[in-house]
Image (cartoon, rainbow, N blue to C red; front, side, top):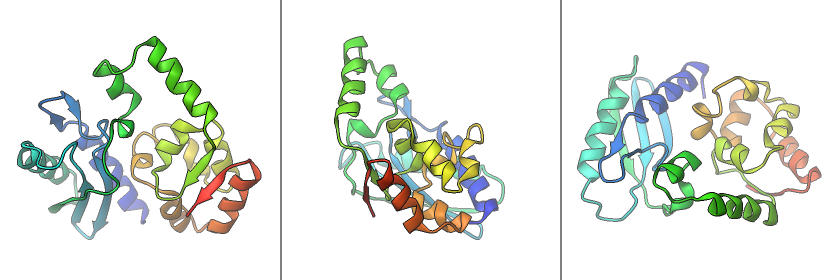
Length: 193
């Protein structure tokens, strides 16, 4: 992905945080509804899902997503692509969204942390890097050691990291995927490509 496109994806993700689900009062980014953003020329394609099939807010969200995307400089067209896989679940929501919806209490937060520590460490190359960084404390350092020096730029994970996957990043930075896989395996991770 070109650097200019990465910047536009960042701007689009920021704009999408202003698109609020009127039922839940949480933005579509923190709800985990945005699955990816592709930019080709002046057109952006947003891959998204809904919390439930047949959601009555589908048209409302689509119109507001298009409006938010078209507010970004250099983007003249927007296509919203509805996808159903992977299936949305509350686990896709950010911690902040869960907290806002009172889905966590102190006991719930502790249980979520303990559950994360107990499960096997898995790096799925199709998962956005922000989610992996949130889940595994050593993720950012391993990526940095592999040559992803930009990963420590403040705000990068919260913006571009929401849609950037390891293979996309490796392609952009011209880093061998096999090198990354071996680095994670050396730290006890199972890698899913």
